[in-house]
Length: 176
Length: 294
Image 1 (cartoon, chains in turn yellow, orange):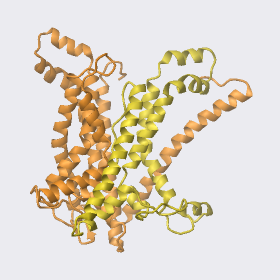
Image 2 (cartoon, chains in turn blue, purple):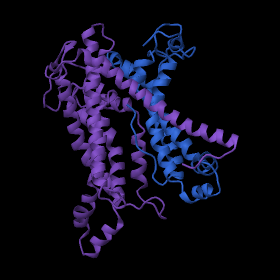
Image 3 (tube, chains in turn cyan, yellow):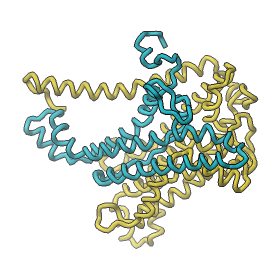
Image 4 (cartoon, chains in turn blue, brown):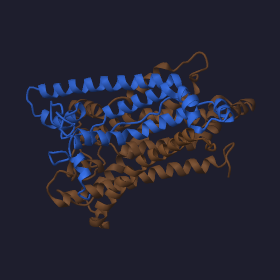
């Protein structure tokens, strides 16, 4: 990559790129497909008659989109975004690679390294099994339980919202 | 697209909206192209065909055992998850009523499928580690990896099978019943045959998903890049491509980095092959569907 000054915004003052903003960008790229697929299904289910009526009255496509389509799909879009959030929560390896995997810390600024539940489990399980009392493995089990409860809760809430406003239901995607 | 209005403000806003949608498209296509160019640009200079035929030794070598291991994992997922998922989708499509027709049945199966699809992959890997690898004393094994990967993709296969079966026109089913076919016979000869392309597409995409998984495999199939492939189901770790990408990028040797890039390239090619064949199957069979132009 060329060394243009604007990229220093992404590198931050620490010089290495691992941090909150990099992880945010990577996760945003990863959840785009599931949000796009869900909202495309939602847009395809808007009935054509009101849209054609709007066009017959002389509304442009922007005005039809804003005043006819958007009220139909508003709740569904919120559900689709929460579905993307659920997928980002379960993302493990990509976050472990770009977030710095700093245990038990909150990033002090947008370039700081931090840790997530999933990244902590995947990086610590190997060394946790060397603990003789078995306490470290149980701690990771607790973290996994909290992560599972949060992820399943977010996914179920998103699916309930989408199912109410869509005939096809939400697509089933996977977080890696 | 409707014509632009004549006056200023409406014209400006409509043009801005159209440009905005194209900009959003660019924001998606741009990073994908950048990713592909980055992977190909880093992998191709150090790629030779011997990478595909030599196994990984230590921290360099080739990818042969990893490729065979990934394909072996995908095969097991196809058999186990394909069988269970297609049967679950069949049940949801044929023996439960659809959502908006008054009484809905199949609540439990649908909710269970939704809950399972929301589980983070590392938690499934952890459960596999504690229950299968340590608890049943299988150690890192092929069977544990098959079970955990199948659990991960079963909701996807069930949902795509159900969608494919629901798209079979009712006229086909009614015609089969009018001809006096028994239920199971009609299911086999009419409904499943018509829905088969959709089911196969769902299976191919599920294989692509399973092939790209890392987190559950690290603790069920082992995290060793240089283990040889063996067909014994237990007590033998399985090499796979995604661990090479995750584990080798922090190693100091340059040969390890090149292997990681090559592994990423092979993964991208594999997933692209699966997705392109799924798309080809859909196009091929939609040519003769009702309402299609060919």
